Image (cartoon, rainbow, N blue to C red; front, side, top):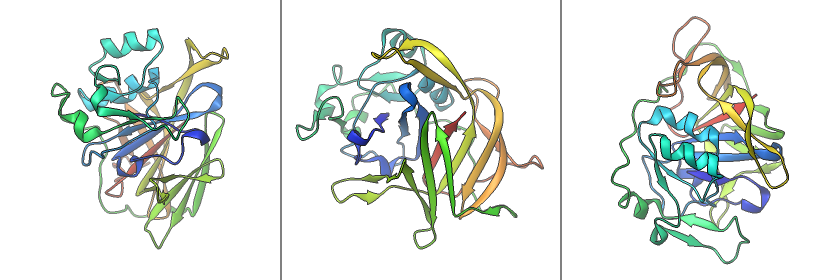
Length: 265
């Protein structure tokens, strides 16, 4: 599902329960989240926002998932309808969505994923997306912190040894979720270096919508257990899984648990 990542949209609801979170570039150098939920379906997740062309590329590896979003530009909606996805928007499933009057529109739409799941039986099970999990490989370099840019936005992940996990910050703001503002943590962070091209779609300010290209191959960095492991990612076609391999050709295992993927140009 699509989740806003602006200051006005935080703290989030439910993001801490996502199995995989992709941080994507969007217009104006900002970012948006594509969060994948399979093992847990929270009763409140959001704020729900609009879809982008990058989403179809990423989700092609997942089989036939439901894509939860608030809307999309007409050319993007055409792609969604043509893709192996089940669109799930408020106007089609109003009982599963709500608005929080304490927040301004458009960052006030939330979804009950547990309720929604029963309303989209045509959504299929998640297929193998290529990620492998297991013990840490040998080697790696200490990495207490890493900052990269997704679009023009700095994203910093910091290793917390007491929590055995990474915290995530957009700019200087550490990501938190829920009314008690619990830090959102990741067990593994993958920095995936991708090509980015401009879409024909533009926002109200005239900024082109970027498309992160997740089919092909490129450099990557796997951050787990407070260490950094160099890798290459490869995905020959949109329906194929993404493989992460070390310089010696062996697959790089991720730490079991929550994975964040930063799509970096």
